Image 1: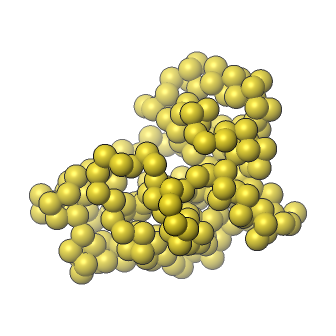
Image 2: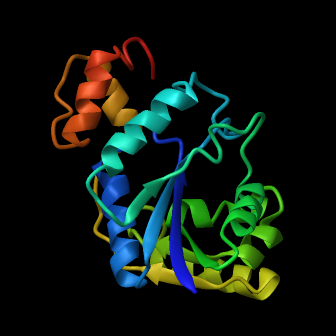
Length: 204
């Protein structure tokens, strides 16, 4: 059975921290590949204007180019309406019945998952790989949340050792708006795309 990681996100824009997390999961969990999935319409992102799905997909595709164990899919960006992880996993199981899925998230996301749509379906369909960053959630709090999810949903959760990398899409957008450098924060191909398409001027 193929071990396939999933790293989803708004990716507005995708940055080096996302790629390091994907690579860390690939190595630590012995994955065969990692699917990068830009979200379509996220019900958590209603507070600001999100870059159109096609442009976020293209930046993600550029970021993954040249890495043969990264694959980008438009499974969410082509789907109308809000994107829900449970539905995405169900569709992936239909498309890839031989794959075993590992959903890669940060510790800050894990503590919110019980409030997502159909959390039980998510935990049934994927093993969770959580990046245990000490600057996001205290170790004791993270362990308590993991135990609660394991008891409530029979979740399969494994912690990933990761470095604290201070890169955020919000900061990158702000830097572009202020005319500051984003070099090394995103792949060169993504930086060129942002410049050539005039993204993030006048947005938070």
